[in-house]
Image (cartoon, rainbow, N blue to C red; front, side):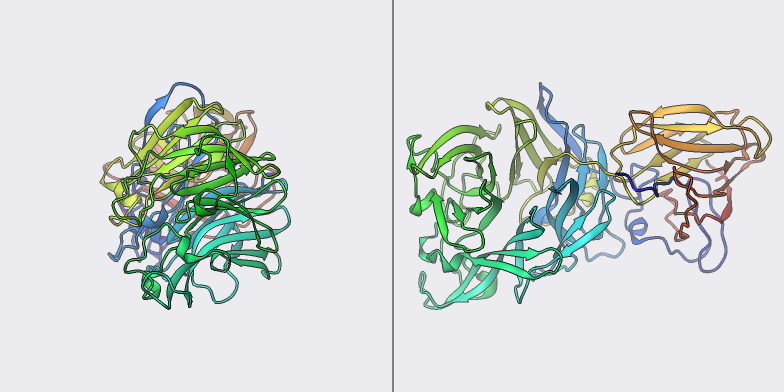
Length: 581
């Protein structure tokens, strides 16, 4: 259900601290001290007029012969993002949503490092979740955030107890709990390698009550698996928390048809089922502890490095095998692939049903990735990539035919800042979900009088399909408004031409594909003939007609950017035309 308070304001800047206000239409040069949000200061240039961020990456399509699932692409920066130490530069990249044609839908920085971006449903509500850490140190801080469809945070989740964790995955359940899979540097007294006592990165599951934040259950891999059975190398590992031996390396978690945990392990090369609430191991697929007879000549259990996991139906496991264990020096690896495996726990038989291979032959060094069975039955694989500025994905039909393949690439130096990275630490990961965004934040509109146009964008909106400019042809303030210009939405930002014979009163409306009004402005006055454009929101109202109180926005901006803030409902400003337009 849409919030009632979805309004569209024609945005102008209000006075700075000094009280002096001079705004050049479309360039936003302001006298007085700047109080614009940090975002506007950090990104002085952009391909957009209404969004002061660097150029988003471009989608490079390899194959798109048949229609794929119509979901949106969710891109997670991963550990490659770094915190800038240079003043006025981007902190780190934020999570982002794109359409399948590469158009930006939503992005937001200021979260610090982020990962594990996904959409999760609880009952009839959908939420966007991801982990973030605003610290520049990799010290196990941070938290998971849960955003509703208006992009407002409704919950923040942290591990319970004294755990300095490295997050892997968050799963929300219909039972009102949150399951967090993570790693934690832990000292053990079991000898491994040449050490009698040392540090390991233990894999931990915590199930937490979403209402009370109380810990319901905790599981640790070290209490159920011998660290000496790991496939990872122990050399020079375990002497300090920073060099902790990553013996298990959990990569994903899901619930099976009975509600028990199913997790994947990279360095044990297996998938494991655990009794929920008790933690005992129910079965192991792959690795040295394999529980199953393989009905596919060894292919069902032949995992090199499990990177992601999903259970669907009564007996089907969907896995992503990167084909490479990074800690084993000289290991040649094999071509990465996703696979569906039939699991029969009554007969202890496992059978390979289908393999979905990466389109790049020989690719086997993916450090991260995602695998999903989409609502239409297609299989979506986010491969990540060794290239720190790329995120590749493929989509297959259920019978294994490649339908779509693409990757994100930087469009320019500016987009390299969008995804500012170090040379290592993991790559971006892309996944796909159905999502309806109805932002709580207002759209942003920038007027360019000399250009005879205005620009509008609504960060996160997924429903607007067209923008309507309405105007009167009578004396100022009188007469009914009529449609003067209808423009189809053009990606993230839309340019709307202003008719030469526009009346004194203008209104902008956003409509969906059924013609329903989603947002609208109120009483925008235009005085183009006098050489000035006076913009005033006389009464900011919602679509339902309820008067709203709108807080005044911050003043100040960068002249190159053209971004404009939010006007309070009783404010009015005279905007002078820039000499150069």
